[in-house]
Amino acid sequence: MSTLDKPRTHEGRIVRRPGPRESAPEAAHRRRRTLEVSLAVAVPLVLVLLWQLAASRQWIDERVYPAPSAIVADGWERAAEGELWPDVWATLRRVLAGYALGTASGYLLGLLMGALPLVRAALEPILDALYVVPKLALLPIFLNMFGLGEGPQVALVAATVFFFVWISTMAAVLAVPDGHRDAGRVFGANRRQMFRHVLLPASLPAVLVGARIAAGVAVLVIVASESIAASDGLGHLIFDSRALFQNDVMFVGIVCVAVLGVLFSELVRVAGRLLTPWAPRDRGRGQS
Image (cartoon, rainbow, N blue to C red; front, side, top):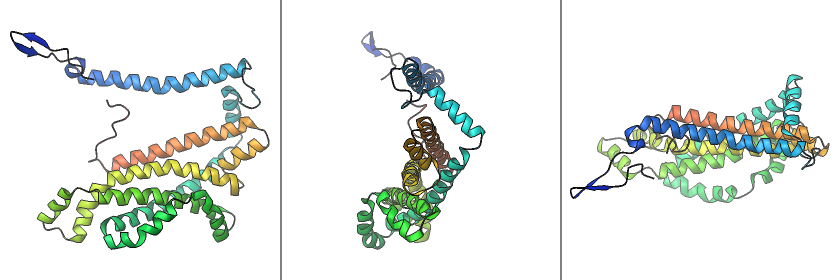
């Protein structure tokens, strides 16, 4: 909504006076940013307080839904005694390894398929068919291939991340404007130079958006995988605690997964900003 005052007529002319956003844009931006941060903090805090109140007043069964204070106390105790960190590290190790493999392979193949029509024609049908298969359904195949241990977990994360990065990379290369390509041809760029100086920098911002989405999905997949075929990790902790009716431990695991997913996604976003300083920033937080 415009912050300009309503038009006023003055001697047959329309006069529009600047509003607060136009006259003091930095102050308006700070106010908007303060409001957004306040809402981001206040809404979760209110929900947690309502949860705490419901548990303390026994509106909900605290054995099934422990109070946030009990969850924090249990998590702090497990962390201080060193019981929590092995599971956190196991999940993080698998996510990082699978994410690195999936991102590298998806990015390279996406570049080739986006730049070379014959490669795209040869591989796109089979990859499209594999993409629609639920990735968790591939876990038995990976168990047969790698046996028990880290291999199936890492392979499942890599396969999931691969498809997100491959699709975003190929689409980004295909979406490079013709004007960019024409400018490269005008300056006499050969195929290698066109690939390096035109296609790569023009497509990289969109590729990194796909990589950020894949980071969050990688955490979700590993939790499901660890609940089925692992003896450690946050996924195993969550579902094993539920089976033992240790719901406070279960919620500790869920909170750890949420924190891990947010931190990993934000790390990828910050890395994307550093790698693509020429790209416009997200018009989300802090902007209107």
